[in-house]
Length: 191
Image (cartoon, rainbow, N blue to C red; front, side, top):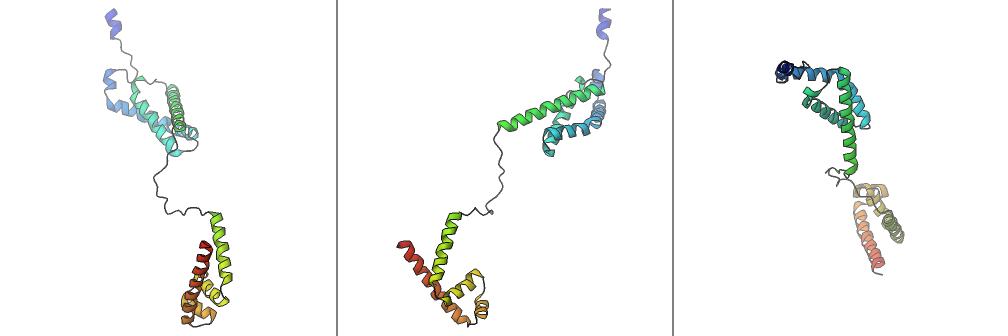
């Protein structure tokens, strides 16, 4: 009788060595588990990750991988399997949250050199005040040419037409105005 009791095999799916080695039975059972639980698990993990769909999907895959590895140990009952899956998913989500808190924030290696550095507002205000003072020291003719060329970004021909003077006069006044600006700024910097 003792030998007969030892020979009794529990017929739960996955406990029979013949069934355990049958990949098609494991595949079928895993597909059934996945189909029955994927949607509620995905919603649960989405909430656990505070809306991070990518993290939720990774946790879902890890949960299913663990179910696959423990296929022979999973209970027969669908409700018990679901409880097991949700427990594993919850523990994985907690572990992932703890890992994120213990690690420093990851910085991507994206190229941000194209972003202009914020200008120092104080330096900007000082430069504008100096420039305003310099422009006020110029003759009205020189100031008008510089404003047309550098502030309104007009070409020499456009400035000449707007001011009503020949292009050569615009070039000449621009040359002398810039020379005067350099002298004024140079005198302020050294003096």
